[in-house]
Length: 474
Ligand code: FAD
Ligand code: NAI
Image 1 (cartoon, rainbow, N blue to C red):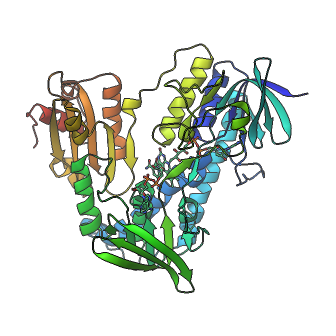
Image 2 (tube, rainbow, N blue to C red; image 1 turned 45 degrees about the vertical axis):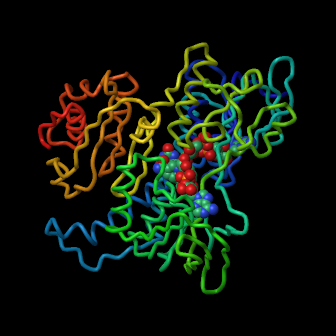
């Protein structure tokens, strides 16, 4: 007989596993199916999705390892620490990253046990609406669920004529498994993955060249941040970034990869030993049997949902990368919680205006809310305060003084409209601005809050004071 659940979550990435756990916490009979091609130590499909297996977590592990290597080579010396003969053992670095992934992936199974979520290994798909409940197929089994949450995520976008073999030409999955430092690394796409992975291999010794189609660098970021980032990445760190590029052809030979492209300067060639293709991700609805049940999917392949993640079919929901909005793990998790709470009869909500973005380069880049250029375009009156890391004692102590914190507030109400940071620990500092925005706080609210000394968080305090032109240390 088919197993019956209140909620079946299809996909065990961050959006899906969190939805399943929250539903179970609220007393619903909850299950999550997962069909990842990679197996966990028990031989079952790994939970955790892109984020844990081939995304956020492994990339940050490599970023940290490569940053330590870079510090040993370039920054220790200013502290009087002489590190000679520093060498990188790439297989050990990769193994450490893999172990972290395994630990976290296994941990989700533990959480499922703790909260009584049924884990169903296998590919989930719709069969039919039967008497007001959804008959689903998971692997070869049939399952009945009152509610179905689709959390099937996204996959790397590939370009026609560029055959990704995950050996010479790699996407994000292959880029996390490179087993030796390539002498010359090519990257197509100066987006988040391009910059993060480009940074990893540049620090480890590769000559890195990034080819970007758009003529503006980091167009989604605040223009002042993008300008500073460009200066740091190109002039200081030596990443070769070419903007406004049109890729003409990519070919491979025993010598590596040859990319022919065109830009303002005419026809160009890039010869490299490995090529990372990082040109965005596409929603994944493969094999869901969505059309048969009439599930609406838009022209970009996303499941169409309303602001509460409800799809066009009764009791069918979509969360995470497979629906509109930024493809970020924390956005998906928030949606998973919201949907579980709504199903349980509560009032779930996601504030899409307060979702932080982080790029884990060094310096890190983080922002929340509106950029200055967006506010100008919308004609919203604003004032801003900007302070450099150089004015902060803790940053000086750490020898990490590149960048700034900028807070933007409404010119009349003083309500915080955005915060933009480039600098060390930006990923942690941004949380204060997120909380402030979530609760509709003003720059004055942050300015009036006591910040521990000496901390980097004082930069947020100073930037908030600077909004009113009364910063104390700058
Ligand atoms: P996914 O994580 O893609 O999970 C979907 C899951 O569903 C997969 O496990 C898949 O196997 C499963 N599935 C699909 N179809 C079915 C089916 N029919 N039946 C059963 N199972 C199915 N985001 C951040 O916020 N911070 C970061 O630092 C960050 N770094 C990243 C680095 C890289 C290299 C990449 C590629 C992405 C990164 N992201 C980051 C993005 C983040 O990984 C995604 O936004 C997040 O994983 C989306 O979560 P999700 O649950 O919607 O989908
Ligand atoms: P992206 O959208 O950030 O960047 C892709 C870049 O490729 C863009 O700048 C685009 O203009 C460029 N591009 C597209 N087609 C091109 C072409 N034909 N030639 C040259 N350039 C081209 O996507 P990316 O970096 O692949 O990452 C995918 C998503 O994963 C991100 O959008 C983000 O949502 C998520 N992610 C988040 C991270 C984080 O939060 N730190 C880290 C990595 C990924």
